[in-house]
Image (cartoon, rainbow, N blue to C red; front, side, top):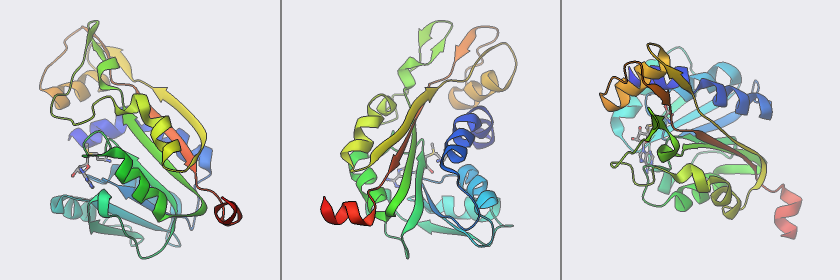
Length: 220
Ligand SMILES: C[S@@+](CC[C@H](N)C(=O)[O-])C[C@H]1O[C@@H](n2cnc3c(N)ncnc32)[C@H](O)[C@@H]1O
C-alpha cells in the first residue's frame, strides 16, 4: 500500500526526470533498491520489449514483489544484490535509484557502483529526500531509522564526486491539507493521521548525471 501511495505523490519528479532524458524503447536500465517495483514498472512500460530493466534489491523479498508487480513485462529481470556489490551482465543506458541512498551505509560507495554500471555517455538519476525539510503543521519531520534522512541536501555533490557531469538537479515536495493523497501517504509512512493540519512531505531532490563518453574517459 505504501508503495502505491509513494508512487502517486512522488510520481511527478520521476516523470520529469525520465522525460528530460528522453528514455525510450530499447533502453537498458537498472533500478537499484527497487523495493516493490513502482519505478521498475514505469521504466519497463517505456523501454518496451526491446529494452531491459534490471530490478536490484538487497532484500530477497523484493525479488518476489517485483516479479509479481512486473509479471506482464518480460523485459524485467529481478536480481537480489546489494547496491554496494552491483554487477550487471551488460552496461546500462540509465542507472536509477529513489529512496535508496538514505538507507545505505555509505551513499558514495553505492553511487560509485552505479556509475560503473553505466555505459560511456549514459545516465545516472538519483532521487533522495531532505526529510527534515518536510513539515506537519509547521513542525519538521524526522526519520530516525534512516541512516541518511537528509542525503538529498548533498546529492548533487555526491553525484559529481562519483564522476558524473550534472545535467540537471532540482527539488520537489508534495503538499496538502485535509484528506487526500498527501495525508494518506503520511499516514501510511508514520502511522499518524495529520487531520486538517497542513503537510509538506519531504522534498525529493532529483539529480540527473551523465557519465563521460568513451573519448573523455580515455582523455580524462
Ligand atoms: C524505501 S524503499 C524504496 C523502493 C523504491 N526505490 C521506490 O522508490 O519505491 C528502499 C529499498 O532499498 C532496499 N535497500 C536498502 N539497502 C540496500 C542496499 N544496500 N542495496 C540494495 N538495496 C537496498 C530496501 O530493501 C528497499 O527495498
